[in-house]
Length: 504
Image (cartoon, rainbow, N blue to C red; front, side, top):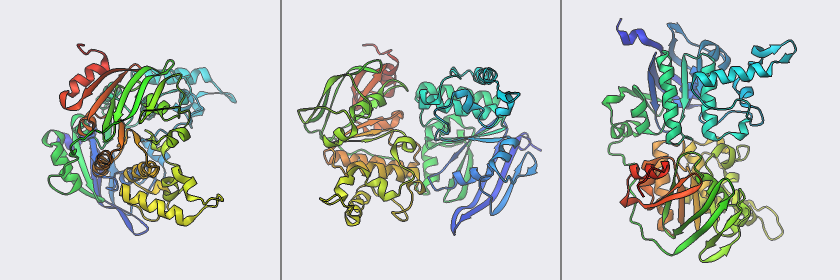
């Protein structure tokens, strides 16, 4: 037996799974080795999530074999998988926000800290801090989850998985909410895990990251296994071709930029202890990027500009007219739209249908003068949104959660386009979206700019900023440290401005 064969901890072959006649997995295979980071890639709907849910005992496979540590695997529940050493860190944060970090970390394992009929809270906090210390994570376990950033919560999720002593840790888009500094911290944690002979499954749509982090990468397409390759033998273009099933797939090519008049001008915009004296302007037909490390203040500026959060001073002018925006309603009235960074918590309403989510921002237009809801109006507006955003769906009455992440994002973008905005703010618009959907959203953003809409795009992905944006605003510690023309700068210069090490 070769060294690699000896290291195999899990082997899935020819796995099939159908849901009501829809083949989620037609012929999927995956081999994991101890001490490796294994990339799993494919477009949304390729079968990645379904395969992982079978490994976790959430779904039962219809056919195929899975061998884990030399024994056939067939978990009946996630609890069985967890007990056997397989755990998943999900892309979306799964915590009770009003609970402390220590409570969340050991939720469901309270018996570990029972002192008679009561929980020894001090012992639980100490144990949580020990977990963080072992992973070299600097987080206060007594804080409530709601007081942590998304990046910090993501690290807590990883720490929770590690605290189970798992042998296989599945990470679903683990860097989607992290900026460069946090990403490096995650990579360090992953290195620690594989040095302990753990196997890490790394699911990501960031192909540069896959090639940088993973030892091997497996491609699934339309529920079928396509190939497993050593990362060192694969290029990004080769991966894209394998994922999409067609040659020469270009993620995006931006059309020429023809700026119009200044549509938005922000002067000395300040929110005490959050951001200070922010000044910038955006022209019609321009895509203005916002770069910065996590916590720099990019999202906070956007949220205050849209009226979600308050600001303390400063002026905002739209088409030369001073406006006062104290709520999202004020923002919409003044021709602003905003796609927030977190689809789950602030973008989609998962109890509502696709059509209801899409038309939410123009609900008054659906009703007649007497305030009576008109289905005909709703259908007419939704049809326009679908055409503008190229949304792919089954029935408009289906819950929005039935859509892929990319189509959910198109619904949200379409929602704001229905308000006919002059300015559209996009906060991490392609977070957790597959290659194909990402390309479609890039094209949509370009089309919006060509129509004269001023677009503000916040992104943690440097290649995305350079591909789409005409200028890039760099935010550092709540202040603008630089505004750079994309064609006259590079990622290294941007990072210098992010870290405050620029020469100027």
